[in-house]
Amino acid sequence: MRSEHRVTSVRSQERGTAASATAVAHPNIALIKYWGKHDERLVIPRTDSLSLTLDIFPTTTRVQLAPEAQHDAVTLDGVPLRGEAQRRVIAFLELVRERAGSLQRAVVDTENTVPTGAGLASSASGFAALAVAASAAYGLDLDATALSRLARRGSGSASRSVFGGFALWHAGSATATAAEADLGSYAEPVPVGDIDPALVIAVVNAGPKSVSSREAMRRTVDTSPLYEAWAVSSKDDLNEMRAALHRVDLDAVGEIAERNALGMHATMLAARPAVRYFAPATLTVLDRVQQLRREGTPAYATMDAGPNVKVLCHRQDAGRVAEAVRGAVPDGTVLIAGPGPAARLLHEDGP
Ligand code: DP6
Image (cartoon, rainbow, N blue to C red):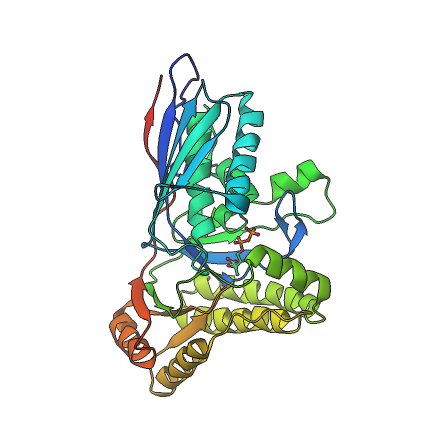
């Protein structure tokens, strides 16, 4: 591991007084999608994926050890987490405690600037920030690769948010033992030359999604007759995209990203019962993106587990693309994002 990729180097020791650490991470948008798991418990995906970490919507998470407490206390934007969301954070803390050999409970406070559950990757920034903060608070000294593996256990896409810019998540081997599969499944940065991308994000609906991405990908793998074909073609998409990034060809990157995302949604539409995230406004934006291309502006759409559309374009065209998208969905919110930084510790308070 190269030293510039180390996220945390300072150890915080658990002694009488409580250690705490605060970390910040940004969401990422996959250009080659992660859709489908081999192993639900370890979060081992069926395919490699490749993403761009954004410079907007950071998540900030503080983990403070609570030596006297009987239970973990978890809040999101000041409100105690309940149900499945709370269960996932506590299961993640258990994993960190197991590795640290600690029984201490923690107080976890998260501030999200992204609408939660709207297909804008709040779980990616959330678990990347939690991995960095919790490992520091519990005194684990992890390099960025180990942090990526750890973040993956919270939410697969979080493995990529540990890194800034473009990141490739290696699925790892399907036939390996659990320990080998875990070791082989991590993200790493993809160095790219002089490229200046922007993602214009059309938030057409910021409410929570009808089916969680976790449930939707499970149903797709289990029931969609199109799934295997997409997984195979996604491998070719990834190879072609890596070549396109290598030659700094943003238009080819966009074309490949758009077909990969549409293919992923095709697998869901063929699931039983179908999972359809597209809303009427989604299609309106997709039409507008095609029109932009016909008018000579390179712009390419990608969509995740929700109705919102992210449009990849050259930075110099971002204003024009945003204006066109805004005109198409006057009730929506349109934002411009660029490449964002790696997850990092803001500060760490030793005992
Ligand atoms: C459509 O990472 O949220 O955004 O691992 O079950 O937590 P879990 O899933 P999650 O899925 C993201 C799916 C996606 C595509 C992607 O980000 O690659």
